[in-house]
Length: 310
Image (cartoon, rainbow, N blue to C red; front, side, top):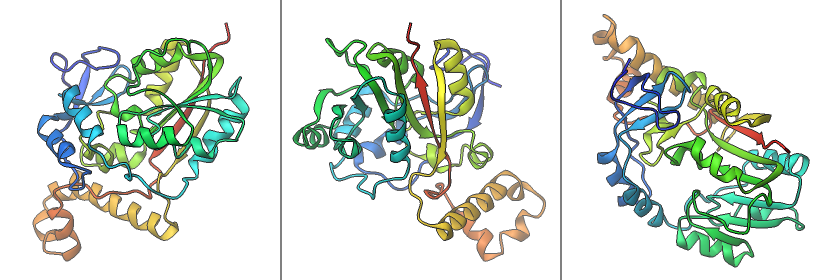
């Protein structure tokens, strides 16, 4: 355990344990994202709040450059199933129709809301934000920590979908956004789940933290710690995959992930390793320098956090 040098960015505890050096995927949107690899350190898990985090993290200016350079046509895909869960939470939990999507990109999700919704967005990418604005979405800023004067306690729902992993301190961001939630309003957080069994056994060699723009990795224990310390009520939870491509692909991704985990964690370090490396399948696993992208594994989660009414 590292107890003296690596402070948790969320709870400031110095009781963290090293999970190992980061392994980065070969895929990247632009050169600015690739450059972040040299600025990114290993992975740690806080023993107090259970946040998994990168240390050191790339500087803010490098992160802003990476987001700004992403093409506006990135992440074009069919409507994911978990969007329906978000819409249901908004319909059944939000006290009003005002919805703020933090990191809305082109506004694709907001476009799926009922016509009587009042839609707002925050987006660091100027081109994508321009597309959202052209769709009638009111853009309020470029950063999750921007001040939003005149909007205090006004939103029935605030959505952070695939955003929390990009911030240094999720608790600070949630605390800031809470100011703009109406009493009884709901904060919807959807991100990778560090407590998925395959992720926990595979880190640091797991695909989700192979992107250098992912700074932290949340899990259900972190969210329970957050709810307890910040006085949120966890109203609903979801486990899901971002890109479900059928049962066959799900089984294929899961099998590949399990085989790789077993090789990295046990078999590759055993007395049988030399003999096993002569097998074609094992040789391919051993040659992997970056984690495979297991998009069909159900290793994401969503949480609906409700603000007290008093």
